[in-house]
Image (cartoon, rainbow, N blue to C red):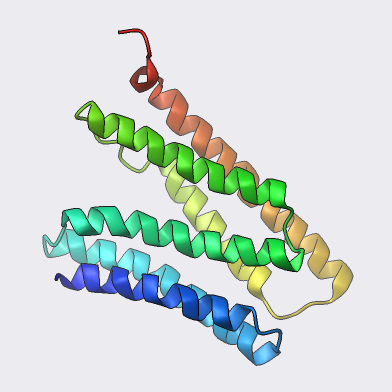
Length: 179
């Protein structure tokens, strides 16, 4: 197993620890959850860097890396819905985009093509991580944090929509059902 894959597996292992910490409503646990989320998010860049620099790209890593990212973000989103920090419709848009783009990538593979990560996808990831980190902050003054949460999930949802639409517009020919 490559170092890059071990780091990706570490990110996956951090997800249940993150969820356990974030669901404890004590301030210390919220800080631990935030730190775990930040560390898990950083491992995404580290494993990709190592895989490229040391030629450690594997099919396992190509499969697991994006899955780990989606699981981490989905875990946070589900917690926000449970806590009332994010409405379920926003969570559904974000999660549906992930399924849709993954499905589009599967269609591309079937056609012998690869859809590389677009800049909008990278921006979506950065915006999502920042928004989630802000929403994980243990400061919970009712009015101000409700407003901040609303801004965070709205921006995250809009950027996610933009990114998903861009992927489908750029790759519309893959979905041409008349052959």
